[in-house]
Length: 157
Image (cartoon, rainbow, N blue to C red):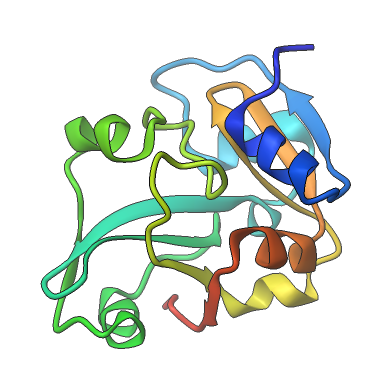
């Protein structure tokens, strides 16, 4: 098994139970349906982490189910911004310490304001990136919410 990532260390420090799941990945197949198939979960149980910039707050992060689309207006409202937009892919690693396709909501370089889709609280099992491509963390939804100290909001279409 791969060495522990910052995301794993964060969960370890909080004594939160999780499991790691490795899978083969390819640059052109980092989409959620592919990853969900490889780890054996429906895409609504894979939560993707998005990095955005608000016009008032600066960088923020959001985590939503893989089968949903982020509602930028709802996130802007929830985060106290007039508008938010995705950061450029080339900025992601510098801001988070993670590369595209491996951004974890846990263990980022900085503690950005974090917004988690509220459905996570009803999920017995969710999967998030462990902080590198080809490695997913399985954890309970409420444990993910506790670990990220995220603001629980409805931010999807």
